[in-house]
Amino acid sequence: MNAHDLVRRWRRSAPRRWAVILLALAGAALAAGTWENGVFDYWDLEASYIHAPGVQFHRHDQAEVPWLHHPGQGWMISYDDSLSLTRKVELLRREGLAGAMVWELSGDREGVLLAAVAAALAAPSPGLPAPRLEIRLEGVDVVLEWDETPPAVCWHLEASSDGAAFTTVAEEARSGWREPRGAARRFYRVVALDN
Image (cartoon, rainbow, N blue to C red; front, side, top):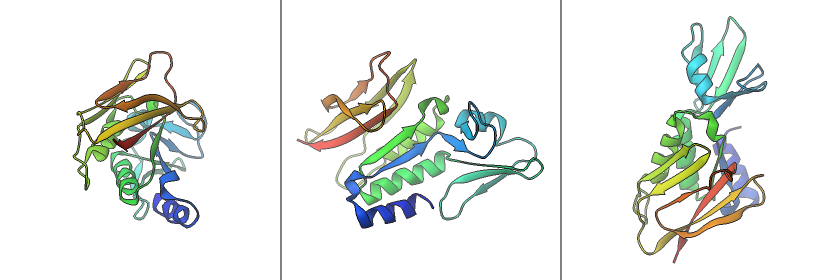
């Protein structure tokens, strides 16, 4: 099962505009993790596992996701990297899905994965000019900045603590947004609106 399979199955039962792809900034394994069993932050994978002696790197041909295997220690970790996240963003844009959610921002301390996601989101697409898009953390604040868009396009920004109940945090935002300090939530979605 991979993102392509899930989208194909979703199309059979519900509108694409309801589907959101998870962009994980972490890895999963049946082993001890960064903070809890089975979950590895990307920064920890990069620092302690990806380049460690005895670790074999693989990329699944269909899912286009990397995975690590250490035969001597008997563990395997599946995770997302810049390439796999770029492919997921390309998939959601190609299929016309509602968007993506990121889990979890602190898993990408250096911003490597967020930069790849921002670049994939800002890549040219038919009908809309490609804005410069930047997503970054400043303390506990989440900051999104982009080039001012044409008058016909604005952005509706929503946030949620639980991933289910989204509330509007900004309407008709044109060039950026910051989540207030201390109010940062785990889920964000941005919707392009035609004026």
